[in-house]
Amino acid sequence: MQKQGQVVRFDAQRGFGFIRCNATSQDIFFHIRDCHGGAQPPLGATVDFEEIHVGGKGPRAMAVRQRNLSATPFSARDAHRPTNNHRSAPRTAAPAARPRQAARPPEESTPFMGIGSLTLIWIALLVWGIWQHKLPLLAGLGALGINLATFFAYWVDKYAAQKGQWRTKEDTLHLLALAGGWPAARAAQQVLRHKTVKASFQTTYWVTVWLHLALLAGYLFWERIQPLLK
Image (cartoon, rainbow, N blue to C red; front, side, top):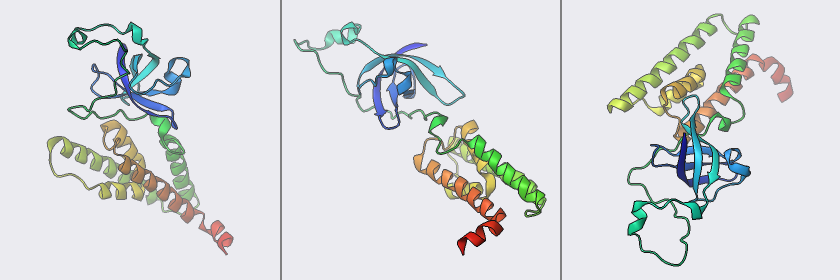
């Protein structure tokens, strides 16, 4: 759907930004490669774009093109503004009366590796550990159980947040992830749209993922690692 909005944020180092549009309830993500000619529109610029939705990750702008200021349509609201002989600079975004929740960047911002690849590595480590009798057979059932418990904990916390009830502590969610429930934690975050925006929570979550994998790999390969430490 063709829409018009205003660029309110852009991260030049990571190459993405957000467009604010009155017709959409949240700011719309766009990447520099989605801009016409690969040119970054300046902050405050009015742009035309195509809004799409992919995989429930929030709105995304495609074919972003900066509008020609001279071709900006005259609105009824402009009729009441004082006129002058000089063209005004693009307006910066005014503080919104109601804060908008910025759309989460797509999965391309996931650090290091995708969650699917890490999950396959984790499953391979578990299977190899059981096959080599380094882990008990019940380890597989334990991994399944902790992931079911983790997803349920996220669902309870999401329900409590919607109903204004007592919330699950973030430390509890992180401990479940560290214990091996991080694949289900990520699934719950995506399916339930829960804890995906808070940057500090996401940072701690990824620490639990890599720490769990490091501890598991260290335990399984300790006999090979130990001589290297001497």
